[in-house]
Length: 296
Image (cartoon, rainbow, N blue to C red):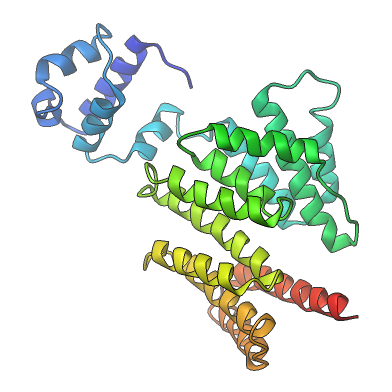
């Protein structure tokens, strides 16, 4: 939802009043009562730094404020990602193919082309379950990686784009971009959603280097992931447990790791986390098939 300065000021005032706060309650050393009053009347604008400070003074998170601005509905990228996520989780090749058709025979903007590449990347990953092997073109990979290198501060959009490219970028380029992601997400990393996206992307990279049996890079990314995990990131910690067991079996040849992976899946079933258990079971079976194909 795009607002004019006046509309943003009016919206801010409505939120402030709805929370039972006066201008004095929200004012601070950074933003005076007079500045806030003029802002609410649409006479002036606040810098991002000052706007964030006033939002925090209302005991709101930035995500909560922007969600309220959008009428508590998803923005375009969230809707796009939701469609991708549903199709990927259901392994629905046809849904992804239909999404691709939306971009055909069009003069695409930068973001539309990036979305097209994202849909392709997810389609290729889903197709592996149907034994259909496709590939991204070098031109598409170069377009996306050049875009990423041009952005100084990566938002969730860039982090998720990079995650989608994980299995298509050459090893050294992947390692370089992963370090760039770590450096270019420091501004947002305390945001929980952003942190989760970064951790997920690093896990994909960890998987890639486990498959490559690159022990040095595996240990580097394991350490980085573990440094970002917080106690409340339960599903991510379970994911990391499974990945470490995958590492133990595939790289250290620890046969007991297979039994432990099955035990994790069984435990999730017992406590009623069926969706999580099913996801792990699917990946576990694909992992075994991958090893079987590789050794045959």
